[in-house]
Image (tube, rainbow, N blue to C red):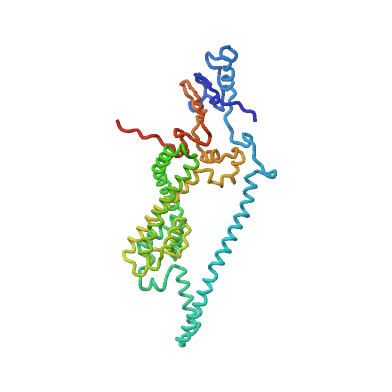
Length: 415
């Protein structure tokens, strides 16, 4: 595709303002697709003499075409006569399936012996019970066990609910609602009635987007102090390390602080408060919850004699929401380092973006900081170029190595 260089690629001292055609709307600008210039710029004619660069500037105005996002702008990178992203995707799919098979093999190897021990133990207990209670028929015992298992699968425990707090008290219901809207879904309690199931569907449809909006707004606020930390690290370490190294170090700091605040410290607390929980069990519960896996094998606040159960459940709900916010913050910072986001190379736009991860990230964000060519400006435009000689691998302290989203204005002290 033949394309002229745009006006902003031409370095001039004072560029005359463009004159839009008659009938053009105010928001079309001088480069409207619906029309052109009615007449050449006043006082500026092609071939009228003067600076030899005037003809090039004239052509830049009149022959400019806006950029088009298609495959003709950049050469498509191919492997084996196919798009590179498609080849990488087809290579990634079997690798992903192999990873699943690997996980299945490891889990089966570790858990199968423990499961067999439990089976043998239950059989011994049943045999002992039958020998000591010979008056009970085996069929009656089997029916009772089936009823207990069925009730337990529906969230009703024959041990706790017979003498303890019900599953659908206000505190328990509040905790259940939080597991629905955060998509954690432990599964230990679920609606039993048809009306409850219908309401759960409607509640999740409304509540999950509301939770996402809340977490997104909180992450935006948390990006302010994390961005100032990145600026401070750039000012102190920019002359020693590359921007990529600084951003990775910044990500590690935020991740370690989040681990200490939402995994290590709460795990010690859970190990003290929850009966039968060790430190590893508490770490396991926090990780399973914050990743929204929600297996439901460990649930805090379900002890038989748990004091202040409703208050305890509400506190856990607040803790889970704050923890999920920091998880989203870490994922945001990680995704903003294109060198670490290998998933970009599986996208089709990676074939036509010059294999530049930073460019792919910015194009995927859908926003740019460049000038808007359809914006009309009556003031002359002056461009200047500043050339700084320095090694490529040694960024200067004055260089802003902060990602686009993290560019913040400097703090101006009060006069």
